[in-house]
Image (cartoon, rainbow, N blue to C red; front, side, top):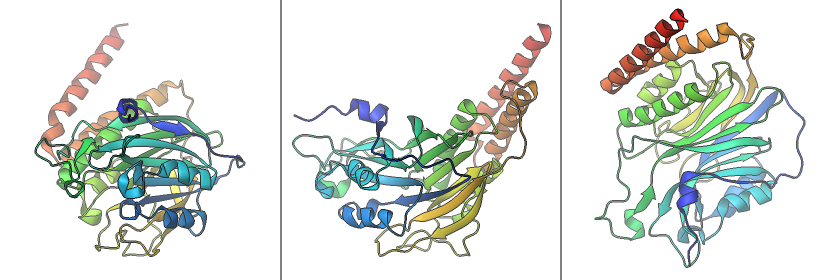
Length: 336
């Protein structure tokens, strides 16, 4: 009898295999890698992560768990055990043609961390432009029938006295660039909703940005003051072995890149990307400061304005509604 998968689809799986906690450091090395093409050969992944790709945070996309093509292995657990790190797994899809007799076949995003993972959750996108689980799809591996949808795996990590927020995502590849920008916009909305502007944050993964730096996804991140953490990599920095395209990457807020590399091991799909980062402190504000609250409100309004002009009029109504709500709140406050 198969284990139930409902909880896996709604909440992340968090487990600890870390044996030693490193002392708080001012610098971190973060690596992101879409391992889709390598899932049938997990050992090269493990050996690469143990050796030349060693990092503090590993941000992996499209990792299998209990699928036929990966020999029914728990790849996140196996990798974490070998690396002696904590990890969190967010189930993106139940692979309907990859099941066995017992465990549900899943595919999703994973964060492996040498830092303590304080909180983790799944942000399932409302905008799902591709139907992976159509009734007409035969339950045959070639057609990739799936149940679920694209997401961002969100984790808050303990990093000295300033916690780090990390979003790990794989935007929909079977869609337009505007569709992917809408999914990225949901990540930015979530960031503004849950975290203050001075909170260090990373958005990393496979963005499927086939238009490179002219992509609406990249321009959206740049409009939100996210810096490209691969900026120190000499051009061109393609991250796909099959196409000369920048399909993914790593962007940070209140962070700077000290060194960045694109690794080119003998793989079929994407190249791993890493960046050594440090914290940028532009200003210091008390959490209960009125100035901090005002800055957060103004930045959110500006965020809404910039976003709707980047790629689509779809957000015009949401933007106007948010501005009306803000003005109404200010009016009510002035009467108190």
